[in-house]
Image (cartoon, rainbow, N blue to C red; front, side, top):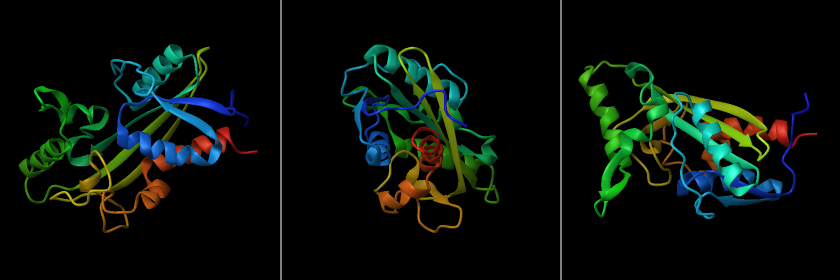
Length: 211
């Protein structure tokens, strides 16, 4: 099925201020000749993520960037869900990392966030299941309001203590199903090939660039 609209050559705004996420997205888009600018590069404000799902928040960010820059924009909303915690932190993944950690100002402390997850699991007892999954929704939006979304998910388990320095966010505690290393221990190119973001990108590429 032909998509309602396709990305052409030119500029694309990546609607994120997260440096790690930006690196991954730029690497995944590198083969397609797009000039990727981040929302941070353009000085765009971060919109309030008032949605209750990954889809809603991805669309909020994509439309805000597309409207402000008058360029097509790609946004990612992703997070970690833990089965034993009823799917938390889920859409509130980044909120669990909020802390005053940078010179008295707000910031994100991911080690603290990983500790919150581990603490809640520990509170359930030593036999609590450690099954978890990463979800990713990619939203493309154009200044005229056209939009499309793509979803990806990978399942795995949580480990403690955190291991590895190659990833970001909750990567150091997540081991993909069938693997023994965390997402923060594997080479970034390997992660790009099999992460939740890679799954969503595979769907985007098949829709936007195939044929």
